[in-house]
Image (cartoon, rainbow, N blue to C red; front, side, top):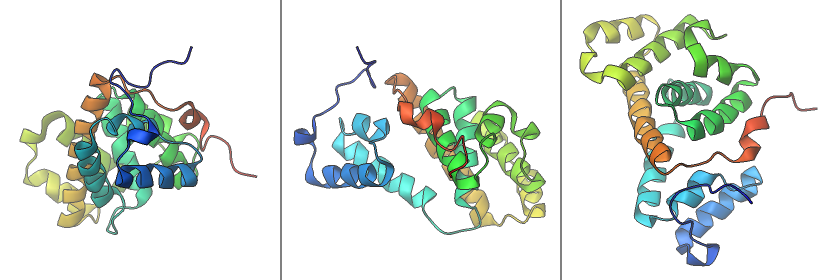
Length: 192
């Protein structure tokens, strides 16, 4: 018997509103499967729309952070928050973007030992400070990031991605959202 992907009900495709159906089918066509986050959030259509609108605003925008760096923030934050779904799913995306099969595991365990640049280590140091103790962020943190060529818009993005995925991690944990099996192997072996 398959393990449930959420402690909450998963609506059937016939129950999905048209806009959500279109989004899910688009993702399925691109990925070859439907990530469980889409199925679990379809339970709450208004929250589905709000979640993915903010997700896309943070993760798909142009700016000083690469797509891979954005995923590094998600993996590091999700590891601190013990979110199995996001570490596994975003770890797969990170491996694919960076074409480095070991990187997501390194960042999830200890980004300071990961095969990343000093700039990226500073970025993740800041993200984890935001994750663990945002009240202690001060001008010294901004100065450190600026010394690594991050501008104020980049710093906002690092903090916003961290904060958004901290919310996501908590909800994924509460609803026991299970990662798709497909994510575990993605990006682990180079494509032929």
